[in-house]
Image (cartoon, rainbow, N blue to C red; front, side):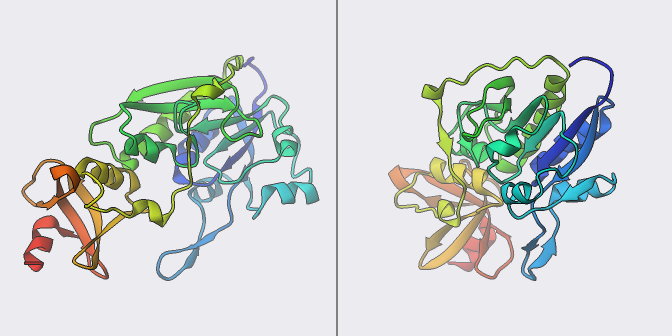
Length: 293
């Protein structure tokens, strides 16, 4: 990117994964964030209180214009010019599919930061599926957006080795920071798109509570352990023991001082480190076993 006038940005993001990228753009003198678009405030928690998105919270102190349309495509149709055309449309964990009309708005390019090494793991839950499928490495991709989901030309990628005990929480934070750094670096250089190899593409779906249902009769200890590391905190992993649901918060493949063993499929053993019964508080595996003798 040539030096001189600041490049204008519309930033589309919602979850905490997007916050490091937004903050990196706000701190860098090469860019000016003119508009933040995020999802509407949603009810959360047991009391269902309306809660702003992490991106909205991060934006409010910077006096940036914020809009929260329920459906951005419909909003743009009714108000096609919410501000002067930006140089870049930056999309990070936004949560809505964008129309071609929106993708055509930036004068330079619509850019997305995706939490996988595309074309592998296109879709809504790439970091969870990297753990679930036992990947040895993951990373981030900066891509030029097209209408087909995560199928745009690759502008840059950065790999990282996964820790053997990586969790969705630890990987989320690592990739969010990695993506923010790669985004800034990419935007400051001439964009050189490279088409993805569609034949190598894999897709991961939006997670549901059903994904977190485990079965010790059908699943090995390693399979359940991966689910726990991938699906905590959402959607969580639950199995049924003696007719009662048990939420698995932390597991291991080797015993610990606070764990209790649980036989699984194919003669494997899962070690329950921290669990939670229905309506109860998190307790250690040892405490749970003591109460179930």
